[in-house]
Length: 394
Image (cartoon, rainbow, N blue to C red):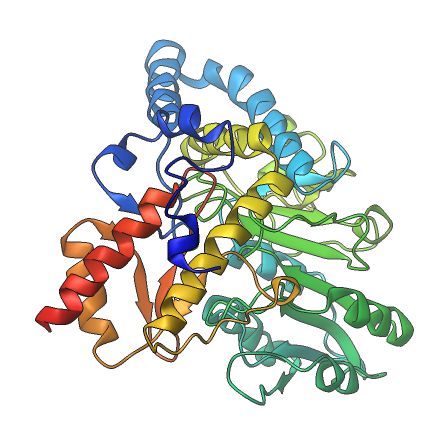
């Protein structure tokens, strides 16, 4: 589908999108196509932060009586987005801490000490797991044949009787390519390895069901497609696995009764909240809720259909201009953004941002462009018009 093919439809297909756009003030002053990196800020987040300050200023520590149930409600709200049962998701400040907590629950001193990880994994995850070498972990990094995608066969071949845990990303952050979760999950079950999936790149734009996935742990966060800002991650651990893992990276909010203030050793919660650590990032959690609510209101399936229509148009218009498109073109193989690369792309990206056309640039990928539920056809036309202008000037 070329850009011209959508030129006659000024309004997005999503009927709810025009009303929802009003909740994101920066859409009035910019062309926002960078939700794969950070979702647009909902006005509701500001109201939530104001309410947090008001609670704090009015009631001091008594505000915990409102904040604690609010955090549980936010976790259950996230659970609805990923089709998890209520009570099976817990909030965390970020994915790094979630991954570290999982690592701390594994004993690497025995023969089963291997961590299988992909070469295309986001760096923070590799930093976390590489640190476990000092405790006996052996890192097995599966290479990529093309620097953009991961071979399912190569990953499965790397999983064996010495594999303790397999840590993979649902979608590659440098190309948007989707992993074959089902095949890898089956191999993990066969080998008896724990399977940890980082779904940060897909949650909110690519429908998935954590209970249908053959995975043990799913982690993610809010500041990309969920439009929740920084400071609100999440972790889902399959109930049968959850009870068998006791994290050493922990804190008072992981206690079965946090306000009992019992001495060590900790009595871990029997619920998903056993993956909590210390004092939570309450403002980050509360500010994330309005973005989550918008995702639920539109529905991830509808968001996906809208996104695919617009990303198809972006890819086609890029190819017509002779650009390299490193993102897989097949729908089933990509998440929610399209990469465009050409000589001078980095300078063009800086010029686009200077004109408030928000995208980003990554070496090896080029300019990354992501439409979301609030993106209109007119936004895509504006992007290419400004891109053509800045390319003429560089």
